Length: 280
Picture 1 (cartoon, rainbow, N blue to C red):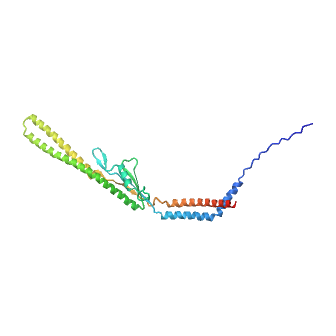
Picture 2 (tube, rainbow, N blue to C red):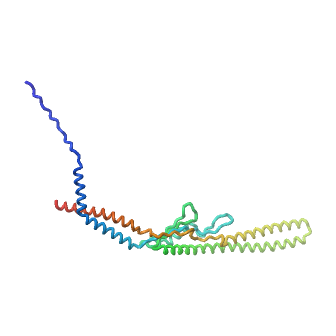
Picture 3 (cartoon, rainbow, N blue to C red):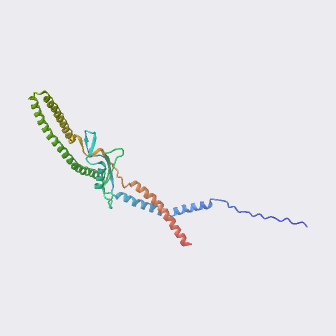
């Protein structure tokens, strides 16, 4: 008896064919939904953009001016150095602490930024923001006037100190002249060669002392000369701009337009989702 050949059953695995039919249907459905609510999207986008435009139009503009400030100093002719009326770091803190309103809770103006310019020792970069260029310029002058008053205090003290030194030197100068005159009279009546030489040497020392004293007085006078005193002032032209730094109207409107458009689309799909959920 022949055995029947048993048929071997081989399981066949189903491999689905990938198509983009469903994706195409979904895309068409999305476009159909957007077109269905196109007037809502248009009106909502225009409303958001209009509100942003109204805000930008009525928002008070803020202008900014820029200036470089030379810190005041006294030239020291002896060492070719500078004696600052107010140290640059101290002046920076003084201006920021007394004139900047940016830390105010109500966002008050004017606002001031000040810093020492890089690669310099005594130049300050100053920025002033206010409701107009004219107001900012007036505020700059107010800052400079206040700084000059502080410098006047330092300058007055410095000048008085120099003048007191000059008075001492002039007193010494008078005494030296008297002593020199007495030695010259004594020299004329001296017959002894040794005494004569000693007096002559003393006269030479007093003459040198007299010359040094006169030179010191000249140097001290030069230190308080207006030619050697530089007051704090603007360096170069103050930069002003016709356009305000904020609000940036074009940017606000563009951002509002894009935001309103995408927000309206999101709302449309959300409403469609809620509607379909209720129907189910």
